[in-house]
Image (tube, rainbow, N blue to C red):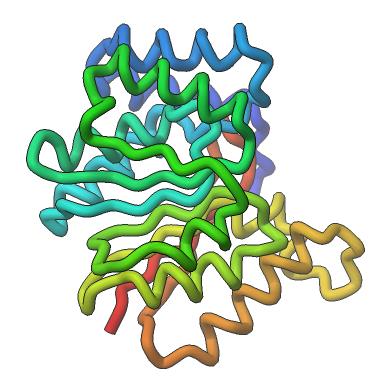
Length: 220
């Protein structure tokens, strides 16, 4: 197969985003605020954000859990799917990131929909009670297995769990990798394979975020 380069991936993302996503000053402002505040540019892409929104809408989610807030870009997408009746709890370890996220959420009119919890996510998750309809896990990859275990505990039957960044540019297939993010992802794969509480698949993606992918799981 002919090699497809990153430039084409970006172009295709742009082509479809221009046609299927409406201009959105609120989301643009959130990205700009994140950059101005020095946050790393690791938000989901607009197309991925819309996917999260559609997934939440498709299952009628009213209570959503997010692990890894950053500046709240994906949070806005998910919160829009459940507002105004629903709620979203998002976990962020960095107080500065949480402060930026809260400002972005307030600008988006979603401050009353979203609760930003600051601290180690595993501590926050241990203190939560379910059920949640959808969980989006996008934090440190070393702890993905533990995050998903907690998400399973907190999810209703038929609930959905999405885990981002599980391909690592293809490095996930390398058992000799010394990258702790790869090791954490491989540990998650083994845990999901052995867990009969969940039915899961993995989708590889390319685009403005490069070559990666996500796990999509439904709780049995």
